[in-house]
Length: 384
Image 1 (cartoon, rainbow, N blue to C red):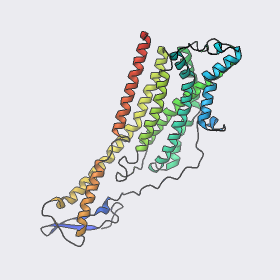
Image 2 (image 1 turned 135 degrees about the horizontal axis):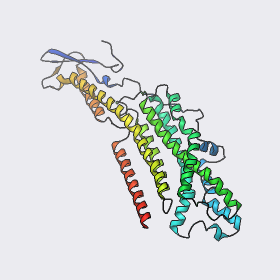
Image 3 (image 1 turned 90 degrees about the horizontal axis):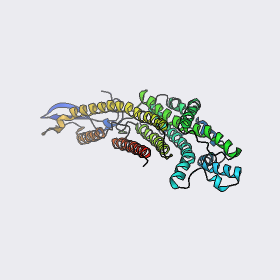
């Protein structure tokens, strides 16, 4: 009988009890994976599409992080104070943007500088991690690189952030109508007028990169996949998907927490905006995980069926009084050892593309953050 791909190289061992032949069992070669282990993906030398923010900063000489810092500073509170000083020549007028106390200074710097800087760096972090994960996903997807690249391409689109920007501006000015207070002259006024659309386009791009990247992971999980054998990887090669989903969610929700704590008090309209951004973010985080969870359960069931069949073939070896006859009798012990290895691999199969402890840990963090923000709002409205 010819060997299939899984059994190539295996030797036949004939086992009998009381002299009667009862079975033929494949030795340890039967545990070789049916599909070859994918070769390491060569680095993709093509020019990847980037967001408009990344493209603009990449055109400047020097590291991205440096320009992100300078951009946030010029169109944030450091630039505001400099412009006010040049308008008036007065240090007191330059510093009159906020009250001289730590809460006021801290929240103002966070709102007009820290969040912008974090969004710029967050866009870069999410896109860099996504591009690295795309290479790891190529062996799992039919037509590989082309399909993966096309699936994640929406994150680089310009139109969705451009549409979201005026929505964020309207909500922001509806919640805080006096944002351009105490105009000191043309320099400060011009800088503030320029800073609003730029800053909110950065925020919109940050939001869109997260939402579209998570949705792309979900689409990949629903499409055809060439999963790795459980003999190679207990996660069937899907752990990069879970890791990327978790990374994107952490970056996104840290940004929302910074926004929530960047004001001494928050109007209900702004609270609604944060909730409107948080709830879809939570749902989208779990969507690709649940899509792959079903597939991993199916693959796990197949692996358990394989183990049950192997035990059925090896059952006579597990009975007292079993003897081995024939020239391949020496394969009995390796065959049983291979069966133990197979059982160990099957028992280690994961049901999620992330470790369950990691998912539980992240869920606990989300609940803790939500409770902390809710407490902060209550104390704010009670005057605490």
